[in-house]
Length: 215
Image (tube, rainbow, N blue to C red; front, side, top):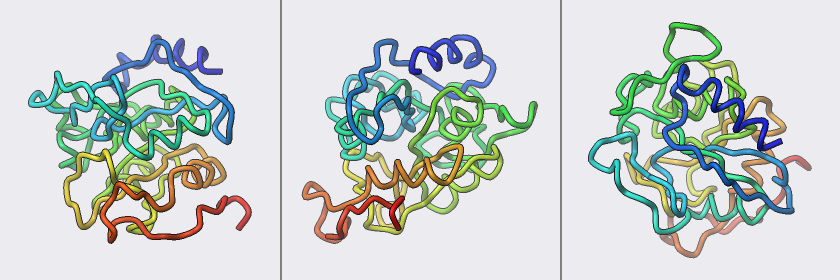
């Protein structure tokens, strides 16, 4: 399944410009996300990949660790296949302000995907991956999801760890899932949510990490 997406990326990403970097040897495993191909917004750290925030300022910054959400994805067998384009430093609402080129809306040719999680939504809509991670301050997940015809969720503040996120606003930002349907979005959210001891005591809540699909 992952190879299918890598072939699709090779064919279509140049036109969509949804991904800034492709992991040509992604490793999955066993767990809730086994067989799932996932892309991560460029302001979230993935070990060994670039967390450029779509900016020339950080274009050579290679992450030395995994964000907590990425660690949890890997622990559940998800394969990280690429880093998604976004508005520079997640400061934008159209997908047009990336230092590495405008991201296109695969669901509406010639139109913007919205932002700032433009590449994450475009990658899902363009069938370059199964699932994606975005980040939101005030619409940056939900707006591109709605523009691209996919599902995006901004989780309740403190429900998902922000450790490893290069944030725009510490008191507002949250990492959340983008997927083709509600069930897949709920699946990814069930994996990434929950208390993280590396975060501030006030940043993640001490709540049970129940599978949302059973609720």
